[in-house]
Structure formats: structure tokens, C-alpha cells
Image (tube, rainbow, N blue to C red; front, top):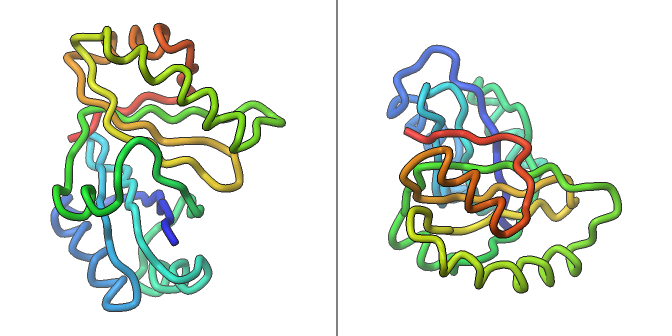
Length: 167
């Protein structure tokens, strides 16, 4: 199963922090990718593990500050490609879902809107992690600027709850 752990880094250099995350997982879970906000304070770690409570225990036992942890589904990319390529995005958009949105409705909407990205030259959609509890999704992009990402989201008629520049 895939999970996104949202972690707060208050005092470590980013590579040291990511090493601490990897060490915490040991052989019990696999760090698939990690994306860090430009200021280095917030880390979004995608982890493959057998269950959520064991993963939570590993992270907390290592003294990591966990702000959120949820099971997710990868949309728009293949897990094996993410594992092999370790791609980095430049921007992360969080979208807090409206009440009542189902996974089926979300996926149908995504399929309908995704072709619109083809006409956008200054932004490239990379992948999305959709929380299985339908609270929100995390969408990764490469783009020329925050304004370009905002315009791209407007073209596909999809809201932005929070926009992070990644570093």
C-alpha cells in the first residue's frame, strides 16, 4: 500500500532529515519519493508499507514530527517509473476535496480534464496522489512559475487549496 507522510522539519539540513526518514523506515517500508518545500520545512514522503499504524510507529519512534499520514492512490504515473526515475517536481498543489466527492467521480473528472494539459506549454503535469479517504489530493507539476501553475489549474477548472514551491 502507498502512503503519504507529511512531516515537519524544524531544524535539520534537508538531506540529513531525509536520511533520518529513510533510516526510520529500515527494511519495514520503502521510501518511494520525497518532495520538500523550498524552505526545507515541510516534507511530503511517499512510502510503500504494509499498513498505516506500523508506519506511523516507525516515524514517531524516530522522533519525526508527523503532521499527517494517509493511504493514497497514484494517478497519472506508474509506480515502477517513480521508483526507477525518482522524479522531482517544481510545484505541489494540494486540493482539499469538497464534501461528497467520490473516488469514481474524481477519477472520471481527472480523465475528462487531463487532455487539456496538452495545450499548456509552460506547465507539465507529473502525477497525483489521491487520498483514499477523499480528503485531498497532492498534484505535482513542473512549471515556469507559480502563476503558470495557477493558470494551468484554471484551464483544467480545478481548485488550489495550497500551492508549494519545491526545492
